[in-house]
Amino acid sequence: MRKRFIIGVELLTGLAIGAAAAATVVSFLIVFLVDKDIEAESGHMATITAYAISRTIEASDTSNQFDTITAPLVRSGSLEAAVMLDYSGNMIAGSGISSEDIPVPGETKGWYFAGCAETDHIVGVRPCRSSISAIYRSLIIGLAALTAALAVLAFFTPRYLSRTVISPLREILFEADRFSSGGGIDPEAAGASFHRLVELLHDRDQQLNDLRKRAEKRADRVEKRSAAMLSVLGSAVFSIDGNGNLSLFNRQSKEMFELSDGDIDKEFPWEKTEAGRKLKPILLSQDKLGNTSSEFQIRDDVVKQDRMYSVVISRSGVNEIAVLVTDVTRISELERRIADQTAMADIGAASAGISHEMGNTLCALSGYVDLLTRGHSDERTQNIISEVKREVESAQGLIISFGSFARSPEPVKANLGRDDVVSICEEACRLNEDRCSVSTSIDEFFINADRKLLSSCIYNIVRNAVEADSSSSVRISINRKGTNLLISVADSGPGLSIDSDEAFRPFRTTKNRSSGNMGLGLSVSRRIIRSMGGELSGENRDESGALFTILIPIQENQGGY
Image (cartoon, rainbow, N blue to C red; front, top):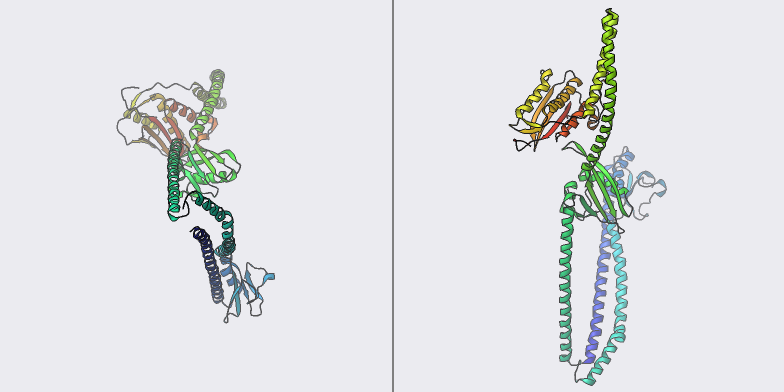
């Protein structure tokens, strides 16, 4: 019984290895035959291609026709090279081949030729080597090596098992016979031992399954926590593996780059959005390990505003890339406003002193001019004095602008209703009623604003529009936008000749400064609107002209604030 057991073990081992070797041989033959079939099919298709090219080319202008047909095939990788020969073997034309490498029909390996009696020439093509053929050849080599290894293993394994396993087992069974009759030798004892071993293996497998389930639960909890943290982060976060494929993204990334679950394990869709097109060159340029940072800017067509984004790129040693994209437009805007306010405060303080000193001087000069007028009545003197007075009045206008800019008046807020706002807009149009109109599409509302200052701002915008073009028309619209009152002043003039942000900077103007324009009107108007909790902005219209908008919060409680 013991001998039969040992012989059975050796036989089963040899049969298992032999079967594996036989399966490998069969696989080797199948791959070899398929590779040969592919090679034959490739040659057949190349011959057909050569014949088709030769039939297509006409007897006249053969070289140009040949280049026109074969050049795209060579560039696209369908053919490695193509040549046209006469029946003497001389090259007439060629693509992807030099004159020193002219093939010989029937002798040069890898070339396939076909001729046409009507055109008196031979066309040869050399197809590109298929990547599938290379794979099959690699498989053939690998399977051949595996077959040889299995054959050697099938020959030496029984001897190795006999020396290292069977002989020690034979001694163990012999010793068991000495202490227990039939222990480990008879089929019943061997079956009991086998069943006990199966039970132990089953228990161990159950333990491993329990450990696996607990590990999966912990991994699920960690993944859910990570997803929740990424979702509330407020920034777009995604990761890319070493092959450039998307492996993870959060909700913000989905919205910014228009991602979907179908994009996972695929190349990141850079060209789908403007943000992706801006981010791609940044990511390609940052190839250092660790964390690097950059930023980019895109135009938001909805709000007509540029948005600024901060980018942090973390690259690991296995070429995994994590990207954090944060919208910092609000922060940049606050920084710019703080800088503008600081600069404007400094300019305002200087303006106050300059206005005072120059105002005193101009008042005295105006008085002297009036005295000169009384003693000189001739026409020439009167003209000169009139010019002097005009210049003095212009300078006084500048001083008034300086004073308005320096004082920055605080608004005295009051509840203004629909009729009040309409009346303010109509007053701004009163001097130009033939060119200015007011319209509204909403019913009653209330805002907390200074009537006088609001009227001054709207009048200043209307005056700028009228002065920009003597033939332009101005339209004031009163509407509601969310929780805000929207007052739009649109004109049909030439529009803004400078950037909209530049138009609101102090002392920035396109008007003639000799008439008292210092470029402070829009800057002061924006400061007034912001002091009432609103916002003033401007832009060029799509068709023609400029559009200035005032946003002021609507009060839900009309009784007060």
